[in-house]
Image: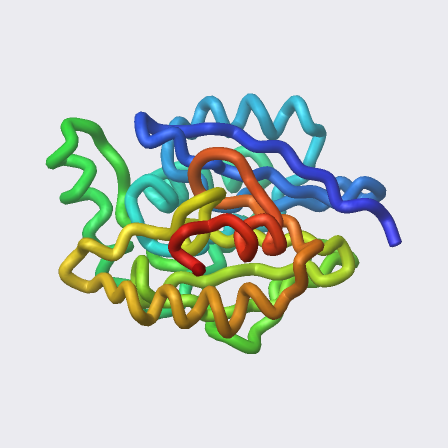
Length: 217
């Protein structure tokens, strides 16, 4: 199988890890969590040579989804074809519907976005020959999803799990118990050698977090 390649583009004042993933042979690519700074993301895409086929969202927060509509529009204008937005779980619809208002409260502009495909646990996300299994891991947001590529031993976890920490749950809709349960029942069983990219900061492995993350002891 052709190799899966990736690049990370930190975006927004929140320094959110926007990921560009692509298949090495076909250059078919996807952008995960374009929170903003669309021009910066487009420049990074051009450097990779990837041909973006879709935009993927792990959850509905502004710093992960705020640039999705703008990036979609720019890519569609350049390619002349559709670039669908896929994910998160429909339980995050209220967050995606509130992006513009939340951005305005921070003093900048962003657009609401409605996915072309909501996803849920058990669904499969594909990129060329590469398969990502979809896990629903609520707590940080009600509709947070994790995308697991078992063949590459790699996962995209959004803001569910971090190096040494876990996602915030101090929102009106947050649920710390649900978050910890999802991590322990769905992520830890993926195996110690499973590496992951999180929404902010450096990535890690399941084994490292199982051994040292204070929230998981």
